[in-house]
Image (cartoon, rainbow, N blue to C red; front, side, top):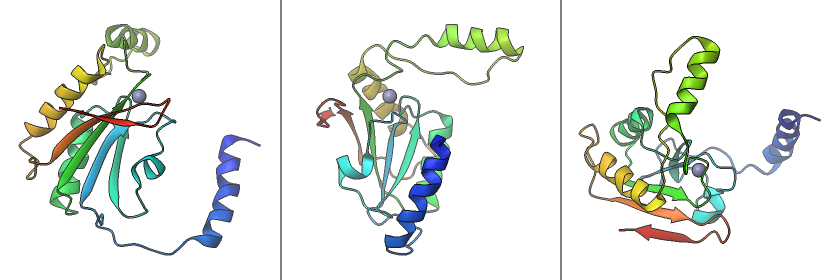
Length: 162
Ligand code: ZN
C-alpha cells in the first residue's frame, strides 16, 4: 500500500466521526507560520481544534513572499489578528546551503530558480529576523501581536524568543 492509499483509507474512517462543517473564518483569529517538518503536530502541541487558526507552512517556517501573501489574505479577507511564528530544533534548514541547492537545480534543469531557500545557522537569530519581517510588512493591518517560539522536537516544549 502506498502512502497515499494509506491516506485514502484513513479518510474513510475519519469521515465516520467527523463533527461537521465549521465557519470559514478562524475562531481564534490566529495565523500560525511554521515549518513543514513532519514532527510538528500543531493540533496536538498547541491545543488547536478544526477551524481555530490558519496554518501556513513551508520549509523552515520562514515568512517568504508567499507566506506574506497568505498572511495578507488571512488578515484582510478572513479576520485574523494575531500571528505566531514557530521554528524548531533539528530543522532541515539549519545550516542549509541555499547557493549550492540553487546551483544544483539550475545545472540539472537549465532553469534558474526565481526563489531562495533561506537557511540559517542560529534558530533564535532566524526567529528574530522572521518576526522583524512580519512586523515590517505593510500589507498586514495587524502587526502588534506577533510572537515567535522555538519548538523542541525531542520534548515538544515551546520556548518564546524575545
Ligand atoms: Zn524545519
